[in-house]
Length: 359
Ligand SMILES: *Cc1c(COP(=O)(O)O)cnc(C)c1O
Image (tube, rainbow, N blue to C red; front, side):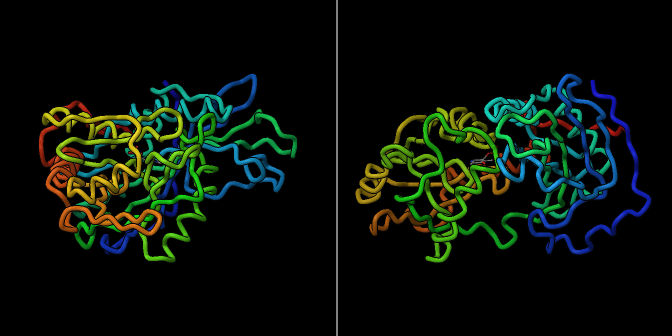
Protein backbone atom coordinates (compact mmCIF):
# COMPACT_ATOMS: atom_id res chain seq x y z
CA UNK A 1 0.00 0.00 0.00
CA UNK A 2 1.30 3.42 -0.93
CA UNK A 3 0.96 6.24 1.54
CA UNK A 4 -0.25 8.95 -0.83
CA UNK A 5 0.03 12.54 0.35
CA UNK A 6 -2.54 14.83 -1.22
CA UNK A 7 -2.07 18.55 -1.84
CA UNK A 8 -5.12 20.10 -3.47
CA UNK A 9 -4.92 22.97 -5.89
CA UNK A 10 -5.99 26.39 -4.64
CA UNK A 11 -6.83 27.52 -8.18
CA UNK A 12 -8.98 24.86 -9.85
CA UNK A 13 -9.39 25.21 -13.60
CA UNK A 14 -12.75 25.67 -15.21
CA UNK A 15 -14.22 22.37 -16.39
CA UNK A 16 -14.86 22.18 -20.13
CA UNK A 17 -18.33 23.53 -20.91
CA UNK A 18 -18.82 21.80 -24.23
CA UNK A 19 -17.77 18.16 -23.96
CA UNK A 20 -18.25 17.63 -27.68
CA UNK A 21 -15.23 19.87 -28.31
CA UNK A 22 -12.82 18.09 -25.97
CA UNK A 23 -10.78 16.26 -28.61
CA UNK A 24 -8.09 13.92 -27.33
CA UNK A 25 -5.33 14.70 -24.84
CA UNK A 26 -5.43 18.47 -25.12
CA UNK A 27 -6.82 19.58 -21.76
CA UNK A 28 -5.60 18.21 -18.45
CA UNK A 29 -7.14 18.03 -15.01
CA UNK A 30 -6.17 19.94 -11.85
CA UNK A 31 -3.87 17.34 -10.30
CA UNK A 32 -1.24 14.76 -11.11
CA UNK A 33 0.20 11.78 -9.28
CA UNK A 34 3.97 11.79 -8.79
CA UNK A 35 6.40 9.34 -7.18
CA UNK A 36 10.21 9.39 -7.21
CA UNK A 37 12.76 6.62 -7.50
CA UNK A 38 16.23 6.86 -6.08
CA UNK A 39 18.66 3.99 -6.34
CA UNK A 40 19.13 2.41 -2.91
CA UNK A 41 15.90 3.89 -1.61
CA UNK A 42 13.41 2.56 -4.15
CA UNK A 43 10.13 4.27 -5.06
CA UNK A 44 9.23 6.95 -2.52
CA UNK A 45 7.17 10.08 -1.86
CA UNK A 46 3.91 9.06 -3.51
CA UNK A 47 1.83 12.22 -3.82
CA UNK A 48 -1.02 13.91 -5.62
CA UNK A 49 -0.18 17.53 -6.31
CA UNK A 50 -1.48 20.38 -8.49
CA UNK A 51 -0.79 19.75 -12.20
CA UNK A 52 2.44 21.58 -13.05
CA UNK A 53 5.54 21.41 -15.29
CA UNK A 54 8.69 19.58 -14.16
CA UNK A 55 11.85 21.65 -13.91
CA UNK A 56 14.39 19.45 -15.74
CA UNK A 57 18.08 19.91 -16.43
CA UNK A 58 18.85 19.99 -20.19
CA UNK A 59 21.16 16.99 -19.65
CA UNK A 60 18.38 14.83 -18.19
CA UNK A 61 18.77 11.28 -19.54
CA UNK A 62 15.27 10.96 -21.02
CA UNK A 63 15.85 13.87 -23.44
CA UNK A 64 18.85 12.16 -24.98
CA UNK A 65 18.37 8.42 -24.70
CA UNK A 66 14.59 8.06 -24.43
CA UNK A 67 14.53 5.85 -21.33
CA UNK A 68 10.78 6.19 -20.90
CA UNK A 69 7.63 4.04 -20.80
CA UNK A 70 3.93 4.80 -20.61
CA UNK A 71 0.44 3.36 -20.39
CA UNK A 72 -2.95 4.39 -21.71
CA UNK A 73 -6.30 3.70 -20.06
CA UNK A 74 -9.64 5.36 -19.38
CA UNK A 75 -12.11 6.09 -16.59
CA UNK A 76 -15.79 5.94 -17.55
CA UNK A 77 -18.86 7.54 -15.99
CA UNK A 78 -22.00 5.39 -15.82
CA UNK A 79 -25.61 6.67 -15.81
CA UNK A 80 -25.70 6.44 -11.98
CA UNK A 81 -22.44 8.44 -11.71
CA UNK A 82 -20.23 5.51 -10.81
CA UNK A 83 -16.70 6.11 -12.08
CA UNK A 84 -15.09 2.93 -13.32
CA UNK A 85 -11.93 1.49 -14.85
CA UNK A 86 -11.52 -1.34 -17.36
CA UNK A 87 -9.04 -4.11 -16.45
CA UNK A 88 -6.46 -1.80 -14.78
CA UNK A 89 -4.55 -4.89 -13.59
CA UNK A 90 -3.69 -5.59 -17.24
CA UNK A 91 -2.15 -2.14 -17.65
CA UNK A 92 -0.25 -2.58 -14.37
CA UNK A 93 1.22 -5.86 -15.58
CA UNK A 94 2.14 -4.49 -19.00
CA UNK A 95 3.78 -1.45 -17.36
CA UNK A 96 6.03 -3.88 -15.49
CA UNK A 97 6.93 -5.73 -18.68
CA UNK A 98 7.77 -2.43 -20.39
CA UNK A 99 9.81 -1.33 -17.34
CA UNK A 100 11.80 -4.53 -17.36
CA UNK A 101 12.79 -4.16 -21.04
CA UNK A 102 13.81 -0.49 -20.60
CA UNK A 103 15.80 -1.17 -17.39
CA UNK A 104 13.35 0.92 -15.39
CA UNK A 105 12.58 -0.17 -11.80
CA UNK A 106 9.16 -1.81 -11.64
CA UNK A 107 6.13 -0.49 -9.80
CA UNK A 108 4.25 -3.21 -7.90
CA UNK A 109 0.97 -3.92 -9.72
CA UNK A 110 -1.19 -3.08 -6.70
CA UNK A 111 0.65 0.24 -6.22
CA UNK A 112 0.06 1.15 -9.87
CA UNK A 113 -3.67 0.44 -9.57
CA UNK A 114 -3.86 2.26 -6.23
CA UNK A 115 -2.18 5.34 -7.71
CA UNK A 116 -4.52 5.39 -10.72
CA UNK A 117 -7.59 4.93 -8.53
CA UNK A 118 -6.49 7.66 -6.10
CA UNK A 119 -5.92 10.22 -8.84
CA UNK A 120 -9.19 9.36 -10.63
CA UNK A 121 -10.99 9.60 -7.28
CA UNK A 122 -9.58 13.10 -6.68
CA UNK A 123 -10.44 14.10 -10.26
CA UNK A 124 -13.81 12.33 -10.47
CA UNK A 125 -15.68 15.55 -11.33
CA UNK A 126 -13.50 15.76 -14.44
CA UNK A 127 -14.82 12.49 -15.89
CA UNK A 128 -17.05 13.62 -18.78
CA UNK A 129 -20.81 13.06 -18.76
CA UNK A 130 -21.36 12.92 -22.52
CA UNK A 131 -21.99 9.54 -24.10
CA UNK A 132 -18.74 8.08 -25.42
CA UNK A 133 -16.53 10.68 -23.72
CA UNK A 134 -14.16 9.55 -20.97
CA UNK A 135 -11.22 10.54 -18.79
CA UNK A 136 -8.06 9.40 -20.54
CA UNK A 137 -5.36 8.35 -18.07
CA UNK A 138 -1.68 8.51 -18.96
CA UNK A 139 0.76 6.91 -16.49
CA UNK A 140 4.44 7.23 -17.45
CA UNK A 141 7.95 6.86 -16.05
CA UNK A 142 11.02 8.69 -17.27
CA UNK A 143 14.71 8.59 -16.39
CA UNK A 144 15.88 11.78 -14.73
CA UNK A 145 19.54 11.28 -13.99
CA UNK A 146 21.52 14.26 -15.23
CA UNK A 147 24.43 13.36 -17.51
CA UNK A 148 25.22 12.06 -20.96
CA UNK A 149 26.69 8.65 -20.12
CA UNK A 150 24.73 5.79 -21.66
CA UNK A 151 23.53 3.49 -18.91
CA UNK A 152 20.43 2.88 -16.84
CA UNK A 153 19.48 5.93 -14.82
CA UNK A 154 19.57 5.87 -11.00
CA UNK A 155 16.64 8.28 -10.68
CA UNK A 156 13.15 8.13 -12.18
CA UNK A 157 9.85 9.92 -11.94
CA UNK A 158 6.54 8.04 -12.14
CA UNK A 159 3.74 10.42 -13.03
CA UNK A 160 0.06 10.05 -13.94
CA UNK A 161 -1.89 12.75 -15.72
CA UNK A 162 -5.54 12.75 -16.85
CA UNK A 163 -7.18 14.33 -19.88
CA UNK A 164 -10.95 14.55 -20.30
CA UNK A 165 -11.40 13.35 -23.87
CA UNK A 166 -14.25 13.44 -26.33
CA UNK A 167 -16.01 10.50 -27.94
CA UNK A 168 -13.69 8.85 -30.48
CA UNK A 169 -16.60 8.46 -32.86
CA UNK A 170 -18.29 11.81 -32.41
CA UNK A 171 -19.42 11.66 -36.06
CA UNK A 172 -20.33 7.97 -36.09
CA UNK A 173 -18.09 5.02 -36.88
CA UNK A 174 -16.49 5.59 -40.26
CA UNK A 175 -14.31 2.75 -41.58
CA UNK A 176 -10.83 3.86 -42.59
CA UNK A 177 -8.36 3.31 -45.45
CA UNK A 178 -5.07 1.71 -44.48
CA UNK A 179 -1.67 1.79 -46.20
CA UNK A 180 0.31 -1.44 -45.86
CA UNK A 181 3.82 -0.20 -45.10
CA UNK A 182 6.49 -2.13 -47.02
CA UNK A 183 9.52 0.05 -46.40
CA UNK A 184 9.60 1.22 -42.79
CA UNK A 185 9.12 -1.19 -39.88
CA UNK A 186 7.89 -0.69 -36.30
CA UNK A 187 9.48 -3.62 -34.52
CA UNK A 188 11.87 -6.53 -34.94
CA UNK A 189 12.64 -9.57 -32.80
CA UNK A 190 14.73 -8.61 -29.77
CA UNK A 191 13.67 -4.96 -29.91
CA UNK A 192 10.98 -3.13 -27.92
CA UNK A 193 7.82 -3.80 -29.95
CA UNK A 194 6.00 -5.41 -27.03
CA UNK A 195 6.54 -2.40 -24.77
CA UNK A 196 4.80 0.93 -24.62
CA UNK A 197 7.87 3.15 -24.90
CA UNK A 198 8.13 6.59 -26.47
CA UNK A 199 10.94 5.43 -28.75
CA UNK A 200 8.62 3.08 -30.63
CA UNK A 201 6.38 6.00 -31.41
CA UNK A 202 9.19 8.35 -32.43
CA UNK A 203 10.34 5.74 -34.94
CA UNK A 204 6.84 5.25 -36.36
CA UNK A 205 5.88 8.87 -37.02
CA UNK A 206 7.49 9.12 -40.44
CA UNK A 207 5.55 6.25 -42.00
CA UNK A 208 2.35 7.58 -40.46
CA UNK A 209 2.93 11.06 -41.91
CA UNK A 210 3.67 9.71 -45.40
CA UNK A 211 0.53 7.54 -45.33
CA UNK A 212 -1.56 10.47 -44.17
CA UNK A 213 -0.26 12.66 -47.01
CA UNK A 214 -1.60 10.03 -49.40
CA UNK A 215 -5.02 10.00 -47.77
CA UNK A 216 -4.68 6.96 -45.53
CA UNK A 217 -5.67 7.02 -41.87
CA UNK A 218 -2.94 4.67 -40.63
CA UNK A 219 -0.22 2.30 -41.72
CA UNK A 220 -0.41 -1.44 -41.34
CA UNK A 221 2.91 -2.69 -40.07
CA UNK A 222 4.45 -5.88 -41.43
CA UNK A 223 7.00 -7.98 -39.56
CA UNK A 224 10.43 -6.40 -39.45
CA UNK A 225 12.37 -9.33 -40.91
CA UNK A 226 10.57 -10.55 -44.04
CA UNK A 227 7.92 -7.81 -44.39
CA UNK A 228 5.46 -10.61 -45.13
CA UNK A 229 3.29 -11.00 -42.05
CA UNK A 230 0.83 -8.48 -40.62
CA UNK A 231 1.47 -7.20 -37.09
CA UNK A 232 -0.34 -3.99 -36.10
CA UNK A 233 -2.09 -0.97 -37.51
CA UNK A 234 -0.87 2.43 -36.33
CA UNK A 235 -0.97 2.11 -32.56
CA UNK A 236 -3.63 -0.57 -32.52
CA UNK A 237 -3.70 -4.32 -32.80
CA UNK A 238 -5.48 -5.62 -35.89
CA UNK A 239 -7.86 -8.50 -36.59
CA UNK A 240 -9.04 -10.05 -39.85
CA UNK A 241 -12.22 -12.07 -40.28
CA UNK A 242 -11.67 -14.40 -43.21
CA UNK A 243 -14.22 -17.02 -44.19
CA UNK A 244 -15.79 -17.06 -40.72
CA UNK A 245 -12.57 -17.24 -38.69
CA UNK A 246 -10.77 -14.40 -36.94
CA UNK A 247 -7.01 -14.02 -37.34
CA UNK A 248 -4.60 -11.76 -35.46
CA UNK A 249 -0.84 -11.62 -34.95
CA UNK A 250 0.49 -13.48 -31.92
CA UNK A 251 2.03 -11.28 -29.24
CA UNK A 252 5.52 -12.72 -29.52
CA UNK A 253 7.82 -9.79 -28.81
CA UNK A 254 7.15 -7.58 -31.82
CA UNK A 255 3.46 -6.96 -31.18
CA UNK A 256 2.05 -4.86 -28.35
CA UNK A 257 -0.19 -7.04 -26.15
CA UNK A 258 -3.27 -4.83 -26.19
CA UNK A 259 -5.84 -5.04 -23.41
CA UNK A 260 -8.56 -4.44 -26.02
CA UNK A 261 -7.07 -7.18 -28.20
CA UNK A 262 -7.16 -9.80 -25.48
CA UNK A 263 -10.64 -8.72 -24.38
CA UNK A 264 -11.96 -8.99 -27.96
CA UNK A 265 -10.36 -12.43 -28.33
CA UNK A 266 -12.06 -13.62 -25.13
CA UNK A 267 -15.44 -12.30 -26.28
CA UNK A 268 -15.08 -13.78 -29.76
CA UNK A 269 -14.24 -17.18 -28.27
CA UNK A 270 -17.24 -16.90 -25.90
CA UNK A 271 -19.40 -16.29 -28.98
CA UNK A 272 -18.07 -19.43 -30.63
CA UNK A 273 -15.64 -17.96 -33.15
CA UNK A 274 -12.35 -19.63 -33.96
CA UNK A 275 -9.62 -17.09 -33.19
CA UNK A 276 -6.22 -17.88 -34.64
CA UNK A 277 -3.26 -16.05 -33.11
CA UNK A 278 -0.28 -16.53 -35.38
CA UNK A 279 1.46 -15.56 -38.60
CA UNK A 280 -0.84 -14.16 -41.24
CA UNK A 281 0.76 -13.24 -44.57
CA UNK A 282 -0.38 -10.02 -46.25
CA UNK A 283 -0.34 -11.94 -49.56
CA UNK A 284 -2.94 -14.36 -48.17
CA UNK A 285 -5.12 -11.46 -47.00
CA UNK A 286 -5.04 -9.88 -50.46
CA UNK A 287 -5.89 -13.28 -51.96
CA UNK A 288 -8.81 -13.67 -49.53
CA UNK A 289 -10.04 -10.25 -50.66
CA UNK A 290 -9.86 -11.29 -54.33
CA UNK A 291 -11.90 -14.38 -53.49
CA UNK A 292 -14.48 -12.35 -51.58
CA UNK A 293 -13.59 -14.01 -48.28
CA UNK A 294 -12.15 -10.98 -46.48
CA UNK A 295 -15.24 -10.23 -44.41
CA UNK A 296 -14.12 -7.80 -41.73
CA UNK A 297 -10.92 -6.02 -40.73
CA UNK A 298 -10.62 -3.88 -37.60
CA UNK A 299 -8.04 -2.34 -35.31
CA UNK A 300 -8.40 -2.66 -31.52
CA UNK A 301 -7.16 -0.24 -28.87
CA UNK A 302 -8.27 1.65 -25.78
CA UNK A 303 -8.86 4.95 -27.60
CA UNK A 304 -11.17 3.71 -30.38
CA UNK A 305 -12.17 0.32 -28.90
CA UNK A 306 -12.50 -0.98 -32.47
CA UNK A 307 -11.64 0.81 -35.69
CA UNK A 308 -13.14 -0.80 -38.78
CA UNK A 309 -11.07 -0.84 -41.98
CA UNK A 310 -12.74 -0.53 -45.39
CA UNK A 311 -9.71 -0.63 -47.66
CA UNK A 312 -6.12 -1.88 -47.67
CA UNK A 313 -3.49 -0.96 -50.23
CA UNK A 314 -0.37 -3.08 -50.58
CA UNK A 315 2.19 -2.48 -53.34
CA UNK A 316 -0.43 -0.69 -55.42
CA UNK A 317 -3.12 -3.35 -55.11
CA UNK A 318 -6.33 -2.34 -53.35
CA UNK A 319 -8.45 -4.68 -51.26
CA UNK A 320 -11.97 -3.55 -50.40
CA UNK A 321 -13.55 -5.03 -47.30
CA UNK A 322 -17.21 -5.96 -47.05
CA UNK A 323 -19.48 -3.18 -48.29
CA UNK A 324 -17.34 -0.40 -46.82
CA UNK A 325 -19.41 -0.23 -43.63
CA UNK A 326 -18.65 -1.58 -40.18
CA UNK A 327 -19.15 -5.38 -40.15
CA UNK A 328 -21.55 -7.18 -37.79
CA UNK A 329 -18.85 -8.82 -35.64
CA UNK A 330 -16.92 -5.55 -35.34
CA UNK A 331 -20.15 -3.81 -34.34
CA UNK A 332 -21.00 -6.49 -31.76
CA UNK A 333 -17.54 -6.19 -30.20
CA UNK A 334 -17.91 -2.42 -30.08
CA UNK A 335 -21.36 -2.60 -28.49
CA UNK A 336 -20.30 -5.18 -25.91
CA UNK A 337 -17.05 -3.51 -24.90
CA UNK A 338 -18.48 0.00 -24.69
CA UNK A 339 -21.63 -1.37 -23.03
CA UNK A 340 -19.57 -2.81 -20.19
CA UNK A 341 -17.29 0.22 -19.97
CA UNK A 342 -20.12 2.73 -19.65
CA UNK A 343 -22.18 0.40 -17.45
CA UNK A 344 -25.01 -0.09 -19.95
CA UNK A 345 -24.79 -3.87 -19.92
CA UNK A 346 -23.74 -6.17 -17.06
CA UNK A 347 -20.04 -6.93 -16.67
CA UNK A 348 -20.16 -10.70 -17.06
CA UNK A 349 -16.36 -10.96 -17.30
CA UNK A 350 -15.20 -9.31 -14.09
CA UNK A 351 -13.39 -6.62 -16.08
CA UNK A 352 -14.89 -3.51 -14.48
CA UNK A 353 -13.33 -1.90 -11.39
CA UNK A 354 -15.39 0.89 -9.77
CA UNK A 355 -13.36 3.72 -8.23
CA UNK A 356 -14.48 4.12 -4.63
CA UNK A 357 -14.86 7.52 -3.00
CA UNK A 358 -12.02 7.85 -0.51
CA UNK A 359 -10.59 11.30 -0.95
C1 LIG B 1 -1.39 0.82 -26.73
C2 LIG B 1 -1.13 0.10 -28.00
C3 LIG B 1 -2.04 -0.84 -28.52
C4 LIG B 1 -3.40 -1.12 -27.92
O1 LIG B 1 -3.36 -1.52 -26.60
P1 LIG B 1 -4.65 -1.36 -25.67
O2 LIG B 1 -4.21 -1.91 -24.36
O3 LIG B 1 -5.72 -2.19 -26.30
O4 LIG B 1 -4.99 0.07 -25.65
C5 LIG B 1 -1.68 -1.53 -29.67
N1 LIG B 1 -0.52 -1.28 -30.30
C6 LIG B 1 0.36 -0.36 -29.85
C7 LIG B 1 1.63 -0.15 -30.58
C8 LIG B 1 0.09 0.35 -28.69
O5 LIG B 1 0.97 1.26 -28.24
